Image 1 (cartoon, rainbow, N blue to C red):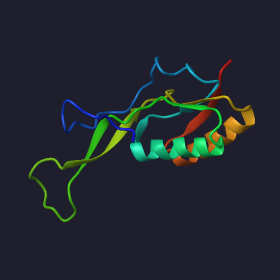
Image 2: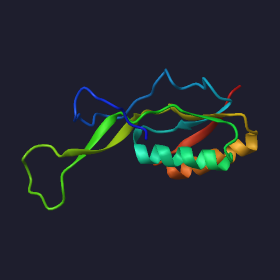
Image 3: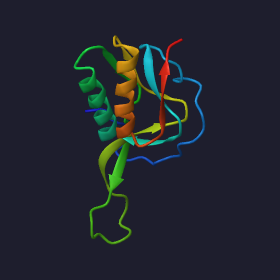
Image 4: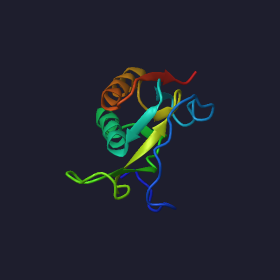
Length: 135
């Protein structure tokens, strides 16, 4: 799936997801894209669900580029465990997203088809997004 093979450290801090970004805000590979309208965290399952929604709508035609990567581990303590005794074990991965970042890029399909696929993907993502077109 979408997570790193190796990391330098097993656990890391969550960090803040705020501000805008100058790099990664323009389309680089495809003609159409999905851009984030707010900052936040996206789990790797959500990224994969959105990617599958786009590829199923295209019926395996066209190209899709995933521009975000879940590289931050999420830790969770087991249920019914008392407070203290350190941080929990890594259970998943997430990606930090800032405002204006391109999440997905698409090419090789019509404008209406790409717009519908972006709507389907936006329903699966946990943040407001907008459809962008290369000009």
